[in-house]
Length: 242
Image 1 (tube, rainbow, N blue to C red):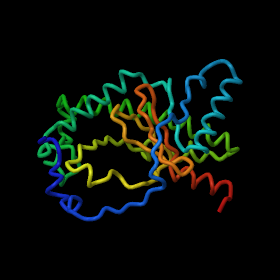
Image 2: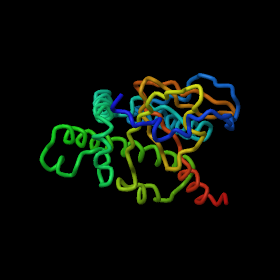
Image 3: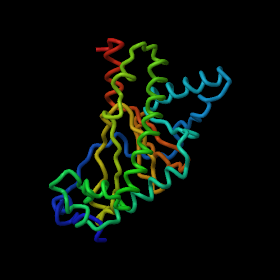
Image 4: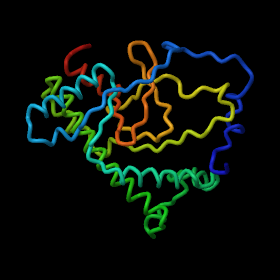
């Protein structure tokens, strides 16, 4: 497709005939549900249920480092619109997306596109801003719950987790021309405080649990929460674990 980058031209080294070596925790991949938590319980009038919801969030974060949040307050139509705009952007020709790569707008949408109300740029900016605001609010709620359940009184999260320290990423993984020879991303951890992910229905996300790879099955109603390295390091510093 002309919307895809010239993968074989740029990264030929990945496709060379050679032995592929990688480190696996365990080659067994299992598919079962990670914790699913109804976040809307935090808004109810039952204090006992609120506290139980907070404990579930803390327990899932400690035992899994992941959980899926449902009834999170972000409407399905917002998520779907966000996904549509993302698809529209990625379907533009590679030349158009890369045309302004030397400047500050690698998407090919210049600053003037926003000033003059270019439909593509305006729609994208509107939904990005709206979606980012909602997700940032959810991240704050989760961070404060984790801090509270760890007994932390520090105002660090409220004072330092600001909108300008957050970022929104739209990622597309194009089909690999040689899937039998090239693997996906190397095993890694997220380096941020919290990652809030809206998966498409294709899947592909895996995590390590008790030494085994676990498939995170997509849930169109859920947002997947991943506890990042910075959160763990900050908690360790506050509790003097080092």
